[in-house]
Length: 471
Image (cartoon, rainbow, N blue to C red):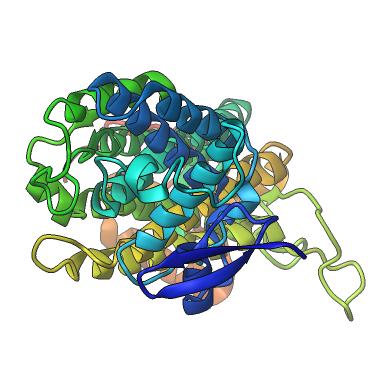
């Protein structure tokens, strides 16, 4: 196999000619074998890096520090990567030492070698176009890497928001469809007072609505970048007009508005924006997990559980028990949510470890954040399409549970008082009698009064359905 020689200040290496990355990427591949997940496994991140590099090349061309021929070749190479080519050449492990330098150089080397071929040269002929001198001109890992994370996160948050809207839409449909299906409300897993299945799904939809608003607000933090900060925020080796130009070009390339951070020194060392975004993802995961678990409980049975709803049958549930079907979609969503919650801890710890003018642990932040975004998006889509969309209510089971519940004795409180109602509940639990029969036997209520008070639709009224007097 033909090879080419490449060197850095550590030494010289033979690189296979079929590879578009170079010596610094090769060293990183050898040094970092942590997760088994490479940059290429996150194509939206690769795309974001190419968008950043294209914007940098065009900005440098605009301010006159990069000749048009080189700038245009870099931009064309970036366009190929943005379009999905050469993704397989981004091979560095996502978790790496060096604050992301290896990722930045992986991008610089691949873009440079693609651009060299566009110019009619061979890979590695860096005298015509150099990864550091030209593709990385006016840049540092310390501004391109966090900025690329933000650009990638901004795009991926859009995908997440679409998935959240999908789930909310399906929940809204079920809320309307089952608005008249009466079911037992429960607190602390014990019978409480009646509600409707529609109310249950409407509450779930409200969770999602609140999380959508929170995430949209947090996404705005991903719009403020430190491109032009270079090493520590002072802008060393960067043209003074580059800062405004690069953000302008990036906004045009991505179709989203990106702006310079207010304080480049602060923005280069502070990663709290990622903590805030992750916090919103964690909150969303907590709520989504609660929804998934409630669905599991309402689906329990089919004969010895609550059986208030029937989730779609997705696969056999046991290797030994014939006919068993498990709520696998609700379960997998819960597991996904726990992963997101754990990632939030990782992001918090990595952010806290930023010392002085740079946070060296940004690769850990990127890995955890991107995993959370991918997992959470998949969780919303999966729950919406494989559970909520096709679940069915069991109205008769729901109503029977209400009518046989001791919790409905609460409806007696305004008429016969708490102590009498509590005594009736105790006897009902001990004897198995209905609360209505006990109230009638004790002469506390008439049959007609019991019928009226225990009418499920009356119990759904949040106000007193009678004019009891204080005695």
